Image (tube, rainbow, N blue to C red; front, top):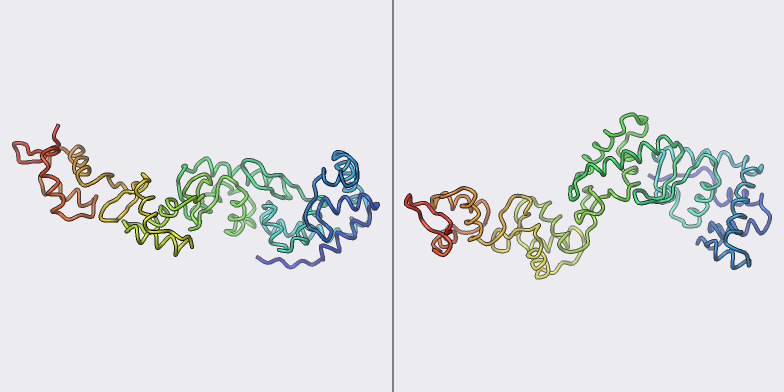
Amino acid sequence: MKITLGFKPKQSVKKLLLALPERSRDIIIKRYGLGKNPDLMTLDAIGKSYGITRERVRQIENHAIAAIRKSKNYSDEKPVFDEIEKIINGLGGIVVEQDLLDHVSKDPSIQSCINFLLVVGHPFNKIKEDDDFKHRWFIDNNLAIKIQGSLKKLYENLKDDELISEQEMIKTFLSYIEDVSEQYRTEEIAKRWLNLSKKISKNPLGEWGKTASANISIKGVRDYAYLVIRKHGSPIHFKEVAKAITTVFNKKAHIATTHNELIKDPRFVLVGRGLYALSEWGYISGVVKDVIKKVLEKNGPMTKKEIVEKVMKERYVKENTIVINLQNKKYFTKNKDGKYEVVK
């Protein structure tokens, strides 16, 4: 959503700064990156340049902001603050700081000016980032409390490695905030609100979950492979997994490396010659012999036909491979009814 401003941020800031004496103006310019260099200077750096303490710099900064708010220049710029307020409300009433700045402009110098106008402007409130949320700006405190509370509830109700489609996530989230004004209950604003959270985010496929989950914060080939196989929905050869990782995520995945990673991770089950499935789909781990053993332990004595039928649902192998494994007397034996059992 591109925003066209009805004012020039640099001109507005320049007018506000005229209300200050030279040293205070210079400190504010350096502190908020309002000069030729948009980088913000720390209290310590500014203090050293003036030969004063960081605490004294803070006092001058606070006094300067208070002086601007009391000035005629501030009153003259009211339409500017009204427009910024309208922008924040249009973005959902509470918005991530960087998201807000990016919507106004990609120019760092313009962003510095907008940030200063937010700091000086009376209707605007900022909460610094914490363990749960990013830096955010808001107008209505009650709205901010509702949205943040609902995001915490959403996080608490998510399982650790759960993945949810974006549509389902938005639907669930909005169900927690039914008493919020209808003007905010849009898909675009819901996604912007979700972006406030540091504990909930989405993976490269657009699926949402807990940020700490390996299914969301992708760290290597194994995690990419999991998403590829999950998206495929059925067993897939490791060569195709490697190819899909490169195609879908633009991450180079060597075939041998992919195979080795799949073998090591309990999330994957080898179900055929090079074919891998997800263990969460219910496939039994192990080689054919192990599968036969687990089938018999679960179901009791079975005929050869019954065993073949069960194992074929777990492994993509030839029927003869299963029969040969059944003939291993070290592990399997026939009872008096001609059914197979596990050797005790």
